[in-house]
Amino acid sequence: MAWIITLSALCGLATSELAAQGQLAGDWHGYWLRAGDTMPVTLHVKRDSATRAYSATFDSDRLRVTGIPFAQVTVDGCCKVVMRLQGDRTTSVFTGMLRGNGLAGEFVETESEGGRFGFSRVRAGAKALVEREVTFRNRDVSLAGSLILPADTGRHAAVVLVHGSGGEGRWASRFLAMKFAEHGVAALIFDKRGVGKSSGDWRTATLDDLVGDAAAAVEYLRQDPRIDPRRIGVHGHSQGGTLAPMIAVRSGNVAFLIASAAAGAPTDSTEIFSVLNSVYPNAKTAADSADARTYTSELVAVAYHGKPRPGLDSLVSRFQGRSWFFAPPAADASYWSFSKVFGAFKPLDWWAQVRVPVLLIYGAADQRVPPRESATRISAELVRNDPNANVTVRILPDADHTFRLPPGPSGWPVTAPDYLPTLLAWLGTRR
Image (cartoon, rainbow, N blue to C red):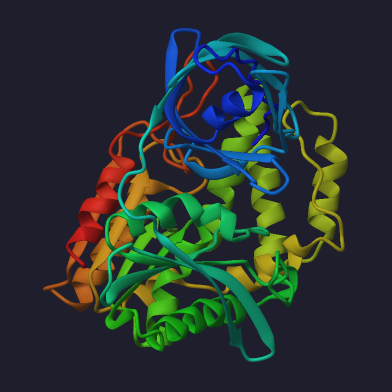
C-alpha cells in the first residue's frame, strides 16, 4: 500500500497540549472522498503511556486491507497531528481539524487528485478477536503464521488460507482471515516457505512441497483444543485454489474447500490464456495477434513440456521489436523449473477424488484463469464421480482475477459487491 498521511488538527475542546493529545487516541470510523467517490475507512490510534509516542493503523473493506500501519505519528503544539505512512509509489498528505469527537479536512496525494476526509470517534465495540503466533513443520521446513480466533469461547470451525503464486506472506490473506473470524470461523494464515519467518524456498519447491505445507497447517489445527477437528476447511486463491483438491486428498482431514479462481483447464492452456490476455492489448493488427499466439504457444511448450529451445529462440529473433513482444524469462528464472512441474499437474485428476462440499468462485472478467471453462470442468468432474456432490458455483459479473471491478474516477479499487457476502454466506453453512 502506498501512502504518506498527514493529519493537521486543531483541538476545539481541550485547552492543554496533554488533554488535546488524549483526544487523538482511539478508534475512528469515517471516509476518504475523491472525485465523487466515497471510501469508508476505519482509523485506530494508540499512545504509549511511557514514551507518549503514537502509533496508528487503518482498515478498509474497499481496499481489502486491515491493520495497515502508519510509519510515524506526531503531535506538534496543542493539536497539530502528523501521521506518515510511506509506500512504494504515492505520497498522501491529510490536513484536518479535530473538534471533540470529529476529525475532518482535506488531503493531497502525489500524482493524483486530492480530496476530503472525515472521521467520528467510536466507542469500543464487541470483544476483540484473538490472534496467536504459531509455527508448524513440514518435514525439514518450519512454517510461521498467525491463528486468528473468534472472540467467543468454545471449539470453532477453521479455515487454512493457501497462497497464490509468488512469494506471499501471511499478510496477503489477513483481510479474509479477519472477516472469517469475525463471523465465527477461525483462520490460519502463514508465510509461504522462504517468506517472512518461514524457512525453505518457494522458488525451488515442488507441488508436493506446497501441498504438504498446507496439509501440515491442517494437521496443526487438528491438535489445537480451540478447533473442532471435524470442521477444518481450505481456502485457496489462484495457484492455491488450483492445488486445493490435491491438499484435500493428501490431507484426508479437510471438511470443505473454497476454490477461488482455480484452474480447471489444462495448466498449459491456462498459461497461454493468461499470457495472451496480457499481450493482446499491445497488438496493433490481426497479424500481430496471430504472431503473439504463435510465440506464446512456443514459449509455453518449452516451459511446460520441455520442447527444445531453438524454435523459441528463432521466434525471439523474428518478433523482437514488435509492440506486443516480451522477452522470455532469464535462463535461471524459477519460471522454467516451476512451469515444468506445473505442466505435469492435472487438476481434474485430483478433483475426481474430492468428496467434501466445494465452493467454486470466479470473476467473470478473469484474465488469468478461464472462469466459465474452469468452473464447468471442475463441477462436471465432481458430479461425474459423485452424483450427489455438494458443489456451489458462483461467477461474479465484471469481476477480475482478484474480484475487483474497474476503478472509478478516484482510482481506488472496487470489490465486486457479492464477493465477501458469497464467501461468508457459504462458510456460514460449514459452522
